Image 1 (cartoon, rainbow, N blue to C red):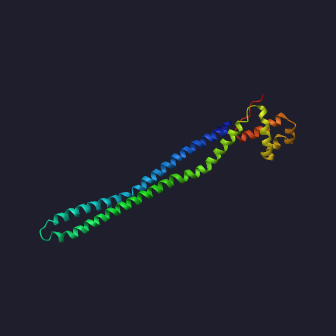
Image 2 (image 1 turned 30 degrees about the horizontal axis):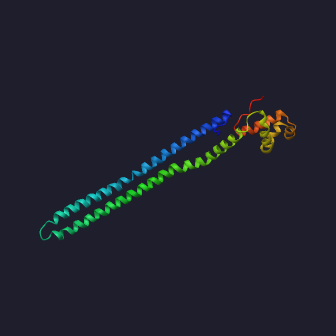
Image 3 (image 1 turned 90 degrees about the horizontal axis):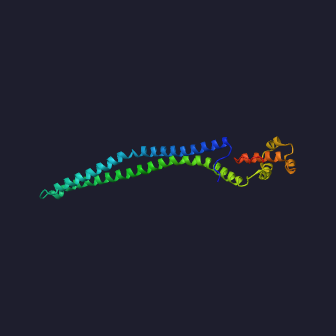
Length: 203
């Protein structure tokens, strides 16, 4: 598998794009974590509400127990304290539900901030890299020596733009059929450069 081009300028560009991709993923992940943590701070009021409800429930329950010990009227006096205790339970549940909602919101925001830009960049970068690796790896298997250039010259005749072919020869197809070694090599070089490869050295 060939990951990088032989040509220095293209290889440097590929290395820089790969490094940028790694940095981009790390930066987006950090930004997502930052957004998550910042959003999660909104949970503090919910935790305060839950704590207040728990304390209210415990206090009213304890007070009701004490009042219940009063002879004759203790049971009737416990009613308001029990209601207040139930209010504390409701406050605790409301705080818990609000905290869970904030946690879900923080997770959604954090993942979205991290994942969306990463996916967008990968949709641009990954197909280019995969296409190069596949093309260069396949081409590399056929470049062993000058004799292999004929295949790439033929591919250049079939796929290269006309203005590039015209710069090599007025009749590049005729020169290829005539086995002109200079034209064959220059045609092959065109195709190999598009694949990021250097031609084999001249014999």
